[in-house]
Amino acid sequence: MAPSADEDAIRLIETRFNDAWNRHDPADMVESLVEDAQFITVNGAWVRGRAELQTLMERLHAGPFKDSRRETFASEIRFLAPDVAMVHSRFRVSGDVIEDGRAITREGVGIRVVRKQDGRWRTVAVQNTDVVNRRL
Image 1: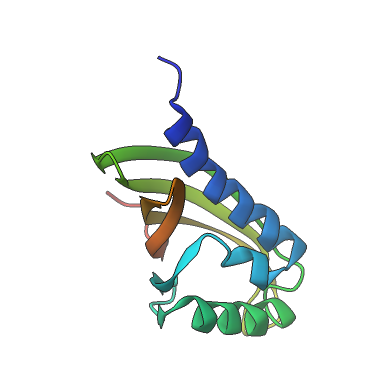
Image 2: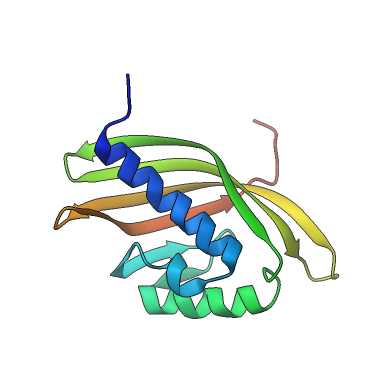
Protein backbone atom coordinates (compact mmCIF):
# COMPACT_ATOMS: atom_id res chain seq x y z
CA MET A 1 0.00 0.00 0.00
CA ALA A 2 1.33 3.44 -0.95
CA PRO A 3 1.95 5.94 1.86
CA SER A 4 -0.66 8.61 2.36
CA ALA A 5 0.01 12.32 1.91
CA ASP A 6 -0.03 12.63 5.72
CA GLU A 7 2.60 9.90 6.08
CA ASP A 8 4.78 11.59 3.47
CA ALA A 9 4.43 14.93 5.29
CA ILE A 10 5.31 13.32 8.62
CA ARG A 11 8.39 11.58 7.19
CA LEU A 12 9.48 14.90 5.71
CA ILE A 13 9.82 16.30 9.26
CA GLU A 14 12.62 13.80 9.98
CA THR A 15 14.22 14.37 6.57
CA ARG A 16 14.27 18.13 7.11
CA PHE A 17 15.65 17.70 10.64
CA ASN A 18 18.50 15.58 9.29
CA ASP A 19 19.18 18.03 6.45
CA ALA A 20 19.34 20.92 8.93
CA TRP A 21 21.58 18.85 11.25
CA ASN A 22 23.96 18.11 8.40
CA ARG A 23 24.09 21.84 7.51
CA HIS A 24 24.55 22.61 11.25
CA ASP A 25 21.57 24.97 11.16
CA PRO A 26 19.85 24.88 14.58
CA ALA A 27 17.17 27.41 13.58
CA ASP A 28 16.06 25.08 10.80
CA MET A 29 16.35 22.02 13.07
CA VAL A 30 13.59 23.35 15.35
CA GLU A 31 11.40 24.64 12.51
CA SER A 32 8.82 21.82 12.81
CA LEU A 33 8.42 22.13 16.59
CA VAL A 34 5.46 23.83 18.23
CA GLU A 35 6.58 26.63 20.58
CA ASP A 36 6.08 24.56 23.75
CA ALA A 37 7.43 21.27 22.37
CA GLN A 38 9.45 19.02 24.66
CA PHE A 39 12.60 17.23 23.56
CA ILE A 40 14.63 14.65 25.47
CA THR A 41 18.14 14.13 24.13
CA VAL A 42 20.06 10.85 23.97
CA ASN A 43 21.84 11.92 27.17
CA GLY A 44 18.59 12.55 29.02
CA ALA A 45 18.54 16.34 28.87
CA TRP A 46 14.89 17.43 29.03
CA VAL A 47 14.51 20.54 26.89
CA ARG A 48 11.29 22.52 27.11
CA GLY A 49 10.35 24.75 24.22
CA ARG A 50 11.58 25.47 20.77
CA ALA A 51 13.89 28.31 21.82
CA GLU A 52 15.62 26.19 24.47
CA LEU A 53 16.28 23.38 21.97
CA GLN A 54 17.66 25.85 19.45
CA THR A 55 20.05 27.24 22.08
CA LEU A 56 21.22 23.73 22.99
CA MET A 57 21.74 22.79 19.34
CA GLU A 58 23.66 26.01 18.69
CA ARG A 59 26.06 25.10 21.51
CA LEU A 60 26.41 21.44 20.45
CA HIS A 61 26.87 22.21 16.76
CA ALA A 62 29.57 24.75 17.59
CA GLY A 63 31.28 22.04 19.66
CA PRO A 64 31.07 18.24 19.59
CA PHE A 65 28.60 18.03 16.67
CA LYS A 66 30.29 20.63 14.44
CA ASP A 67 31.44 18.02 11.87
CA SER A 68 28.76 15.40 12.54
CA ARG A 69 26.27 13.88 10.11
CA ARG A 70 22.86 12.41 10.97
CA GLU A 71 20.81 9.92 9.00
CA THR A 72 17.57 8.06 9.69
CA PHE A 73 17.55 4.56 8.32
CA ALA A 74 14.22 3.19 9.59
CA SER A 75 10.93 4.64 10.74
CA GLU A 76 7.38 3.58 11.44
CA ILE A 77 4.35 5.81 11.78
CA ARG A 78 1.34 4.96 13.94
CA PHE A 79 -1.71 7.20 13.83
CA LEU A 80 -3.35 7.67 17.23
CA ALA A 81 -6.07 9.89 15.77
CA PRO A 82 -6.53 11.50 12.35
CA ASP A 83 -4.51 14.50 13.54
CA VAL A 84 -2.03 12.81 15.93
CA ALA A 85 0.71 10.30 15.18
CA MET A 86 3.84 8.88 16.73
CA VAL A 87 6.93 8.03 14.75
CA HIS A 88 9.50 5.50 15.93
CA SER A 89 12.84 5.79 14.18
CA ARG A 90 16.37 4.46 14.13
CA PHE A 91 19.13 6.92 13.34
CA ARG A 92 22.89 7.18 13.14
CA VAL A 93 25.15 10.12 14.01
CA SER A 94 28.72 10.00 12.77
CA GLY A 95 31.49 12.44 13.65
CA ASP A 96 30.27 13.08 17.21
CA VAL A 97 33.35 14.17 19.18
CA ILE A 98 33.41 12.69 22.68
CA GLU A 99 35.25 13.86 25.79
CA ASP A 100 38.64 12.34 24.84
CA GLY A 101 38.55 14.08 21.45
CA ARG A 102 37.72 10.99 19.37
CA ALA A 103 35.02 11.19 16.70
CA ILE A 104 32.61 8.29 17.01
CA THR A 105 29.57 6.89 15.25
CA ARG A 106 26.55 6.05 17.37
CA GLU A 107 23.10 4.73 16.73
CA GLY A 108 19.90 5.66 18.46
CA VAL A 109 16.19 5.10 18.56
CA GLY A 110 13.65 7.82 18.89
CA ILE A 111 10.00 8.58 19.19
CA ARG A 112 8.44 11.73 17.81
CA VAL A 113 4.85 12.76 18.53
CA VAL A 114 3.32 14.94 15.83
CA ARG A 115 0.01 16.74 15.50
CA LYS A 116 -1.66 18.26 12.49
CA GLN A 117 -2.50 21.90 13.20
CA ASP A 118 -3.93 24.26 10.60
CA GLY A 119 -3.21 21.69 7.88
CA ARG A 120 0.46 21.22 8.83
CA TRP A 121 2.14 18.41 10.78
CA ARG A 122 4.14 19.80 13.73
CA THR A 123 6.34 18.13 16.33
CA VAL A 124 4.95 18.16 19.87
CA ALA A 125 7.45 15.90 21.65
CA VAL A 126 10.62 13.91 20.95
CA GLN A 127 12.59 11.40 22.98
CA ASN A 128 15.85 9.90 21.71
CA THR A 129 17.92 7.11 23.23
CA ASP A 130 21.42 5.95 22.35
CA VAL A 131 21.66 2.25 21.60
CA VAL A 132 24.47 1.14 23.90
CA ASN A 133 23.83 -2.43 24.98
CA ARG A 134 22.75 -4.53 22.03
CA ARG A 135 21.67 -7.52 24.13
CA LEU A 136 17.94 -8.12 23.99
